[in-house]
Length: 191
Image 1 (cartoon, one colour):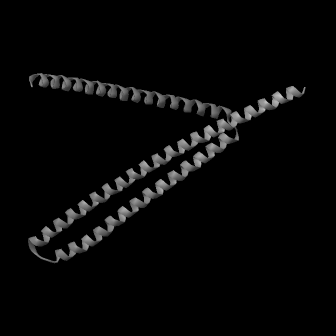
Image 2 (cartoon, rainbow, N blue to C red):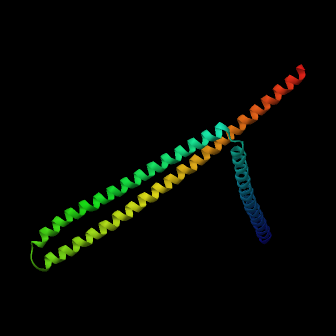
Image 3 (tube, rainbow, N blue to C red):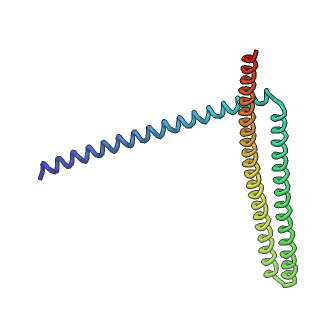
């Protein structure tokens, strides 16, 4: 029995060592993969910037049209964001005015009462007004934050769309260059 126990103990230790080795290899693999992905991202960013510079340098009607479309998209997003923000602020202000009006009527009714009860009710109503104002202001700020986040996402999308325009323009230029070289070659053969 003792011999079997010893063999079992050795097997458990070997299995534990194997598990540790697999874990270490897996961790090293994940770290290496993360580094490669980071390098690929940087490489892609540099390539995109180089394509943008080349695209701008070449100019032409395609670049002008891309600039016009991108600016129109950005201006429309900006207009929608400002309109939404203004609407949220108007709604929040209207809610505050209405709440003050209703609360003011309640306060006037309570002031008709006498003594400390009327004073206490007035204090409670004022606290409610202040709390509602604080809540409405906080809600308005949150709507503005969400609107800004949406605008940034739309701007990011417009930038990605612009890069796609650049890629298509570059591909079209390469096709035209290849076609021109082919035509030149055929002309040389005819001569």
